[in-house]
Image 1: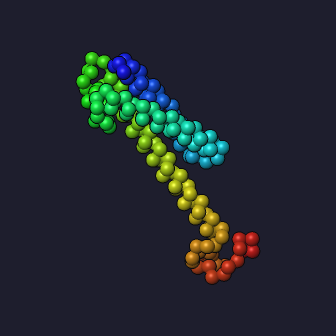
Image 2: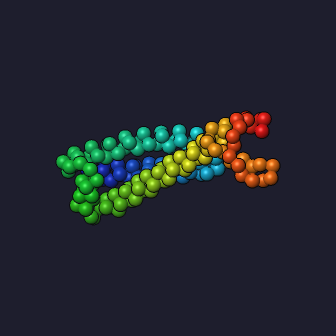
Image 3: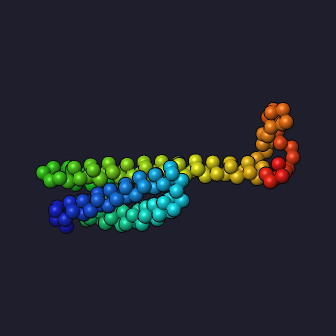
Length: 155
């Protein structure tokens, strides 16, 4: 594979990562807005893009191993630094940067999903009165532990 072909391969991967970055930001907005349809659409789009990204990454890694005989990001860095006259070092830097941003956004989205799940579970526990010692208010307005097992409809 020629240097220009490898640069094209990296440029394609970078462009694809930009699409993934955009999809992750869409997922963030859908999660923040609690828009179930947009969440479903954005997650489907994200998974499709992640699968394509996986293929692109495997292809890049295979080409790097073929060119350098080495594996991993260190081999990519070595290859980039051995061609300072090309835009390869800049391209590799951009690729790593946007990949890190995608990873961070995806992790933050996961934390947001987990927070929403906990919130929903807590709300369900209150509605079902499954949480021990749920505080209710007496006729004088004092917080007291619930001892009864009335459902919400009979409270």
